[in-house]
Length: 403
Image 1 (cartoon, one colour):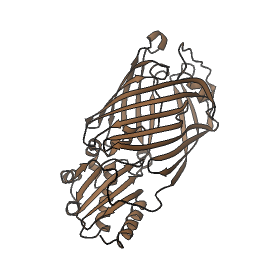
Image 2 (cartoon, rainbow, N blue to C red):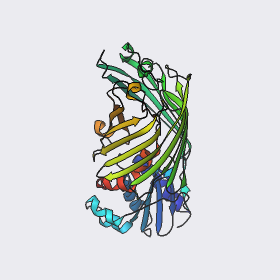
Image 3 (cartoon, one colour):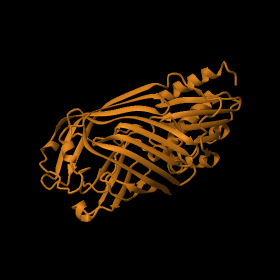
Image 4 (cartoon, rainbow, N blue to C red):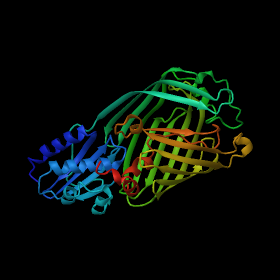
């Protein structure tokens, strides 16, 4: 490729993708091959984002470029490489999306591919949003339904690829969660059953404030280290390694955390209780949107056991799942309910607004909040970050490729 032409092409592609809600992080170009490493910040289905990138590339690249590689990137990590022939893209643009799939190669993405040129002004990057929030409390026999509504300010500063400082602050505007008079009767360490005490303090509550580093040990090994105020109840340090080959239905992970309980006001103060917790995890993509997960390890109340879960993600982006946790904590110590279980629900924001969005609303419904089988609620765990651009998820949602 002509070195004088390349920067102009990259700048034009970056501008087109920015209008489409995507970021061209880096690019390589030769006479016959181009690779575009792109961060999707708009489309809930990764194939839809990849399809937009591929079509823009056919219009912007020199006619001699026949091989087009689109590499999705999240949190500085290249997740996979999807390789097309330009002639296939142009010939099959008006066909069914699944007719295109056999013409595509999905492979692991090399982390330091030669010739990649980073786009201008990608890092550092600052983003923020001010949105409403609602938090409900159900199953309280004294008051079956209580609700707070307020404003949530979130901010994210990406200093370098994979290095992210982020935080979320909430301010309650109206509600009655602080009307609860229930006090935990748990006979073990109150690691979750004091939830009502945290819900009563909605004035400029820091939900999260963390510095996280994401990276690779190899093509199939992803890493994460997070430190700070990990969630509304705990601060600490969390580390994770995930083995997840692009074309494997099976992924294996290990996570270790040191956590210290936060003050009820959710500012910067900490309580005395601290613990080491962690799990070994196995994830299996069953197909047709079903994913199974098994986590074995130590929980926040220092009990040992396992959690089994199964989730189903539908073509419209909705996801529903169920989980159950059994530990060495006796049913007498656990209290009412005997063991932890619940239903988790994910709703794509696009479904409520009618506009493309990667954002999702997540909630977990439990009949009771007890202390046994409790885990940290860490944002950005690796499996949920990388799976969207691996073979199983790409195949399941490939129907959106031409949309």
